[in-house]
Image 1: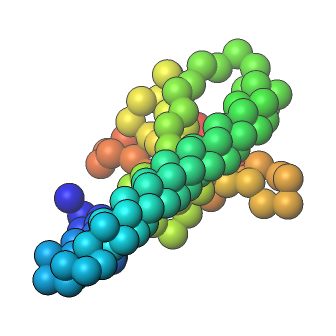
Image 2: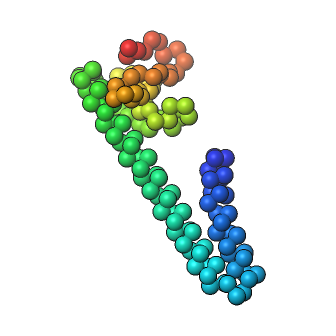
Image 3: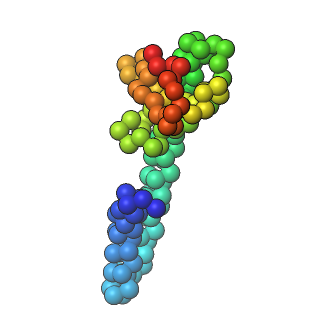
Length: 133
């Protein structure tokens, strides 16, 4: 687990744990605190699921735009696209690996509706990339 995930998990669990601990020691309001903990947990679960789904939907839209651009630019080539998770600066980009050039991963981003090549990564001694425009 990454440190960011641990921090996120801690932030989400803190209010639930506080409510549960208060319910143990405060017997008069136990039912209310337990109901509040369930409501907070449900709201956080909905938020996490919704934000993940919304993020994935945005990425699919970007992937469709990049694929349309690549079909127009390189009509005879084949490629595989994936989410750019290794790049924290441009994490909303689409990483593309062409079948005839598996040692190079190209990063495409969309700015103002235009697809642009943001950069590429390659293995050592891979030679010059074929698609660097």
